[in-house]
Image (cartoon, rainbow, N blue to C red; front, side):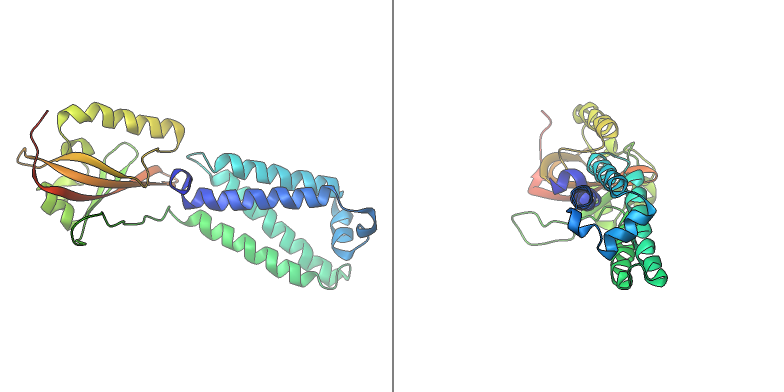
Length: 248
């Protein structure tokens, strides 16, 4: 599941479930507890049922957008609600409605700041070691959602024979035999449509194409993360088998 939704999605899942729990607790407050300072303070601003609805709506939004390519709305709404809650609690301290409200206010504000920080992070990429052989520096390639190479490390240059300047700005299809290019393009289109990849995080055996036309076996681990510019892919590649392969 983590490979499908990424760390941003996992964070939204946590916030979404927590928001639903908070909403449920506000919707079913026992009558004898409604006079407690915290509940009384919230009720003075809006009925507890309204607060419950807002929390549940936020939770549902987070759980929906955790699977989507664009999750900015969920992060913005969750952050705004958490910060609002924190400010309300702090304000209740100064008005005397809830003398201990500053404690809850500090917690809610810190929580909101944490969510806001996560919203600014790209999806973290874990560079996995492949089974077999000694650990060696892998080729790392970063490409945009159209499959255009954005970054190319020296190991990639050594593996495929293209320099950094030659590779950046060109399509990933130059690294694969022509018989695999249609399938590759279809896969990119599917991720653009659905916002997720079934291959993320898995070790995938493939065939690479050297600049001189030689084909060789490779193992690929690909991760995808989302930004304002769309999906970005990071591929970690290592040759396997130690030799070239014959075209089918």
